[in-house]
Amino acid sequence: MIKGCVFDVGNTLINDTRFVQDTLEDIADWLKRKGIIKRKKPFITTYNKINKFTFKPFISHTFSEEEFFQRTFEELGIKSISSKEVLKEYRQVLVNRWKPDNDVIEALNFLRGKGIKIALLTNERVDKIEAFIRKTGLMNSLDSVVISEQVGMEKPNPAIFTEVSKRLGVKCEEIVMFGDSEIADGGAKRLGMKFVLVTTYKNPEWQWESGSTIQPDYVMEKVNKKEMEKCLEVMGKS
Image (cartoon, rainbow, N blue to C red):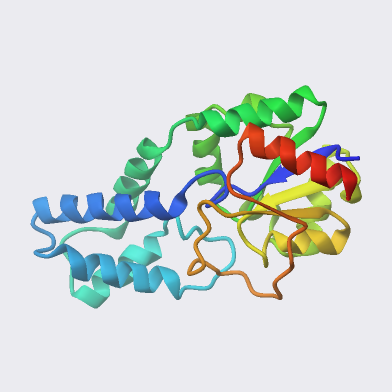
């Protein structure tokens, strides 16, 4: 019997790929208007390269890091603006893009109506997830939030799945993990959780966790009520 549902955030509940691309375009326009850069493409290309090939724990590839802008400016020879100022602008522009997703809210309310406990479990910065929850109004739909930076461990470390199980008060074998990564989120299966792969926003090029891929128990396109009903029916019979 399913008693808990745990959700990744980036590229599972929200389209982080599109938000980051659009935000970078806006930041490039902003820098160009300020006379910091002459062309947008070198800035965006350099930033994306540095972001993609930086592998460190407890950083945000979507909420960005001061280091990403600092290294980008160093490579492009830009000295007329601080990376801290640009990071602040970037994060504000990104947060302004978020809005409540009625499909997600309806799905979570459906689960709560069935008495199923709900948590977020994400490899992210605390600041990003707290801002995301405030902006999207999800707090009333959640029983717990586990953030890698806060607990000092990242998916697919088994300990972080144990932590969310403990906080929900639900056994691992009674939990379903929803996410876009067969490595990070798929690691939940090693503790007896079910793993559902969510595909709508999945970006194969965004993979910073290391480990083996795990086959999902079920694949769904998007987190919405209709697909959640089908998923729970299958999970209940498996």
